[in-house]
Amino acid sequence: MFAATPTSVAAAVTPSNLEAGFARFAAQTDGQVGVAVQRVGGKTIASLNRGTTFPMASTFKIAVAGTILSRIDKGELTLDRMVTVSPAVIVASEGIAETLPHAGIALSMHNLLELMLTRSDNTATDVLVAQAGGPAAVTAWLRGIGITGQRVDADTARLIYRALGLAKPGNGTFAENIEAAFKAEPAMRERDTKGIFLKSFNDDPRDSSTPEAMVALLQVIRAGKALSPAGTRTLIEVMERCHTGEKRLKGQLPVGTVVAHKTGTLMGTANDVGLVTLPDGDQFAIAVFIKGDSKGIDVEERVIANISRLAYDYYSLGGE
Image (cartoon, rainbow, N blue to C red):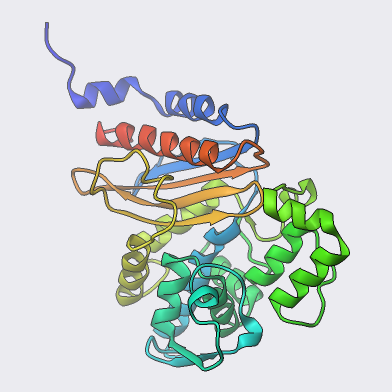
């Protein structure tokens, strides 16, 4: 009896079998899971809940980075340009808000990109959204490179306000507005503490993406069709240094697997999207979105890790 070759094993696992596997893992959460995977340069997309929109949370920061780097490609900005970070724009998150609480901050565009993509720094993001020309300019960049099914409508401060159900924030800083809202509506503080999602936010088309739109964005970036060679290299290299979500896309992959990715976490939403490098040097693009989950981050991250490993094994065995 002859052993099956990797190619013959992959042939037995069709994209429809792969999608059935995604659905089995997705059943571990009580939320809705969206998945899209595609070999880089490939024609076939395997998916779950294709066409469904999900809150991007911080995965929208890839598009922000792309817009900034496209302006750099045009000579409108430079990576070494220094930008003042006013205390008025500080938004709670790891990074600037935690480590640089005092006035007097100025960072280069390159360092702001690094903080935004590797630490998911919300303050750095909102500074860059402004430098990009605002959310509408980010969506315009997406449309300009042929990406539909994804839109950016807010910076992170306004995104968080909406996720909490804060319709009319005050005129203070982010911290002041949030504290005032919590005092006025204690239930909002509880939602924030427990990560309780609002269905209205999950169903909101703003700041959302379908899984296949996110994979299309990753493919266009990887193919060098969105940015210059230098811009493409900068974006992917920074994404490879991402420190968040170690238990998500990377959680069950072989040690040392190179993953250029971006996570997103917000009120029952857990996402991770990126480019995964296979043992032979090929790559696949993957987007896993979860919304409306109440079981917690451990379950959400396990689902993402399981789906990522299933896709990795499929493509490693030659799946198309």
